[in-house]
Length: 265
Image (cartoon, rainbow, N blue to C red; front, top):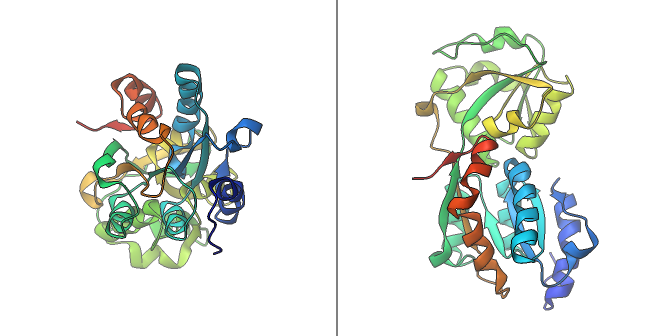
């Protein structure tokens, strides 16, 4: 990837980078202004952060450019020099990677919220499924697909693979898995009826009325789902630390909880 020396030129490339990795981007005319806080965030945070960006502008008068994608894709963009001010990952591993590379300000790092992993089905009234060891998920799928985010790169997919392995059914269903670039894309497959089942976060299921949560994976079946956030090392935006403090303020906890996130003690 080409390296740019001017922040304004870097900001102009955020949209192209986000589209290339399947991200959503705030496309309002003011969002690309140089004074905007550029936030690279896990796709599962979209609903919450869209609302928070509005609150930030109303309370602080600042602007936010939001780029959503899988945490792995966003982390790699930051490694390649993309102009993020704040990075919010859906797992600690990708944040640890950037920390080891010296690409975040370690002193700003904090755990923001928690999430849960759920099995969803197409339709509003799908019957529940009991997720016990050796559950016959392959039988439920038949010749159809199980929608998941990339199982070796994207956090939701990594958690999902771990949970299915813990249940003893990963080898039974791996050939039926339809992998997507991020968790919202997996959600969309199920919402459109292109896959009968999918594994997403509880917060994703809240955001989509066309699917039902048919089971919640046991907490012991996968690593804890924690969202760490930090200011990037290359950010020179004085508003970035203030926005991160705003994100982690007690005033925003009810907003995160309404979206289905868990609070960090």
